[in-house]
Image (tube, rainbow, N blue to C red):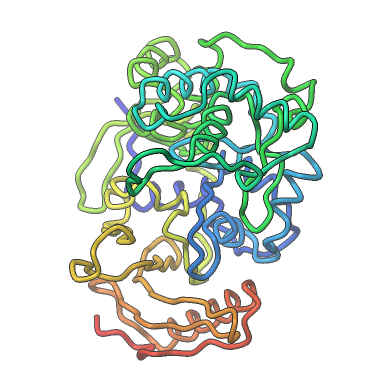
Length: 393
């Protein structure tokens, strides 16, 4: 019989694995946060703060934006590559990422989008310049798009730099104002790391176990989607090989239904040590790993959330960039806010409570406190409300 995990425990276990059970205070260790999560997604959009900074800040509010680049550029403790999207990962994971470089090279070799990349001689010329001059950004090159310019067309040198980055020939050396600088991989990745070599099977075993460990429980599809560095067939084969090291479980969803999944081998100990999460109200980023899998989010919490940045304004239900509100083990609402760094203001434009959530004075006070903390994080002086802090429920 599979081990049954009720919905409350499933929610709490998920938040525990995501580093959201404890108050975001105490000694700060940025690398440990990234290790616990597995990766942190990078994103260019800065409505209040860019996603990667906001995600780390949500786990420890002593974090400041300059700290991430220091880990990469100075300490070489993290590297950049592609999970489901561009992300930073702990450098110690690099040996288990070798097959991902090969997978990405094969994928983009088949992609029409990369057909305009420079030929081998052109790519070698880029690497020769980087070897001579040091890390370079796309701004150091000036190839042009030939023919009609489509919406997503980019110059051949940009396509080529990305191609070599995906393939592991180049690595991100550092960023300046989010501009990526490319260097030869052997000058970025420590030799004792890059020299390690593991079979594909060992890498797949590590990727799947590491995913399950960071989720606590999940279906095979969720395990595959965690890194998106394996195929579904590879995960199925792994599950057959490693059946003895996983625990079959039955998970209760927010609507009371049950589904089958797998859990990490220490699931019973994890459940026995579970405690109620902090009641602090948190404003999470739309790209936070706790909410990234929208289906899992809906199943566990009954919280229907979609980001609407690509939805035409007239068709949006909520807004361009709306933040989920987490309190304890419940998502209680969502908020739309934007930082005006020039004028030193965090503007709050909309606030919605989830159905059945009573917006008490205590909740309003907690939200004000979190907004004040968020304002300090992005170095603005005040919070300005353009709507009421008492949404209709």
